[in-house]
Structure formats: C-alpha cells, structure tokens
Length: 322
Image (cartoon, rainbow, N blue to C red; front, side, top):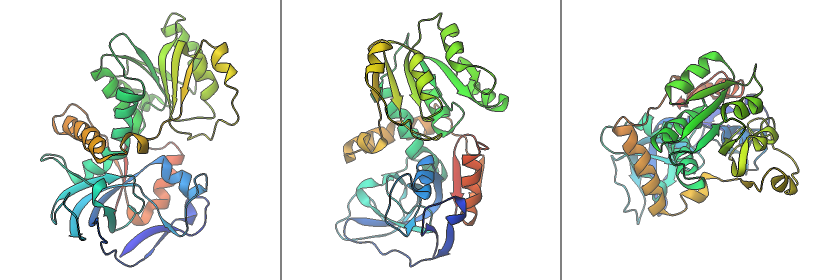
C-alpha cells in the first residue's frame, strides 16, 4: 500500500510517498481503510522535528474510514463499520492499524470524511469551550486564528454556550468566514493591533479567556487582553514556542491563569472519548456544527498540503485523500 513517511525531520520536501506493507491487526486492533486523513498543525511539528518521533514515521493522527479487519479480543467495532479516530499515528496511508479502543463508530448521517474532519479539531474546540474554560452567557472570549480548523468550530461552540466571540484573522476573506461561524467582532491582525482593539471592544475590561494556538507572536499581547483572573489557554504554537516565561507576569497582569492543554488528556478514557466525540458528531449530524472542508489534496500531494497550511493559504479543515 501507499503511505507518506518521513525519514528525517525537515521541511515539506521530507515527506515521501512510498510503498509500505499493509498492516495486519494485532490483538485489540482493527484495520481501517482510510477514506480521508486530517491534516493538523501537530503533523508539521512532527515533520519539522519540534516534536520527537521514532523514524521512519508515517504521519497523521486523524482519519475516517471503514473497518476491514479486526484482531483478537476486539468488541468495540466490527468489519464494515464506518469509523473515525484521532491520537494514533499512521493516518497518511491507505490502511491504518488502530487500537479499537480509539475508534468511534460514526452516527448515521455523518460521512467518513466528516469524521476525519471533526475528530481532532472538533474535540479540541469542545474541550477548550466546555472543559478548559467552560464558557457561559456573559463571557467574552478571544479566539486567535478564528478562520482555522479549530477556530471556526470554536466560534460556533462558543456561541452555542452564549459567549461573545472576538476573533483574529489575517485577511478579509478569513474575516468573512469567522463572522459566518458566529464571531461577533473580527480583528484583522495584519492591519490592526489586536490588543488595542480588544481593549476598545471590551471598554478596557478585557476578556475572560484567550484561546491561543499561535504562540510566539501572540502570547504576550494575549495576556494583556485578559481581564483580572482571566485564563490564557495556549493550545498550540503555529508561530513557534513562546520561550522562557516568568510566572510573576501572571501576577502583575491581574492574577491570571495559564494552561497548556492537549486533547490527549481530555479523551484519556474510552468513556470520555465517546462522550466528547458523541456530542461533536451529534452536533454535525443535526446541523448545529458546520464543517468547512474545501481544501482536499491527494495523499501523494501531502507536501503541497503542508506548504498551504504553513503558508496560511487554507481555512477550515484540510483533508488528504488516499
């Protein structure tokens, strides 16, 4: 079968489309024929060497597809089930062996491509808005990269929970998408100082929570956007890591809270995985949560997809199709 692997860290050019053996299920595993793999910024972190991995590595932590084989002691899924998963490496391939405990059977009315688009980014938006800082009516949140995959979903979930949403984006086209997703105000950070705009929009009070997937270029100003005792949820670093940080700054800026959460700790048990995924997939089925999946690339063009993502040329979810 074909897969996209890296043999050394580097730029998009290190992604190699090559032949590898088709996986066979071990005890507790199922083999999934991948219909679509989700592209996420964490794939860039692994490819570039920011995150360490055993090489060679088949990239991709998210996919949707059909179960074609199961190993011994598998009770969670059956051959023929339409499933999606996240958190298991190897999705950039035609077939993937996945621990059955990590597979979620898709509800009727949700396609495997929708499943691939929803698992990592949808559940990330869910835990941020429902667990890390459970938004409520009267709250105001700042969402960086509001037209990105997580950002568009986070805007929608925040509005479901009654919050006011301020988003930041880089272009007018992305601003339009963020507004369509529910953002009440959108700041064009390429021409506006987002800190000054947040202060203006909140009459100097600041926001209760900042959801930041950008990191290096937004972190310090983001802290200054928070109201006293506000929370900075730093869940990514697309512009690079923030570097050394003095916690005394949190005191000086108003007894702030800082967290660096990850999805893996919010779906650590099968019970929580099914609860969180079930809610997200149910919203998609019922039309309450809208996915944008205009950016699809053939699996063999994974390098091109990475360039588009890193160049901020994409919005919503990017899918790779084997």
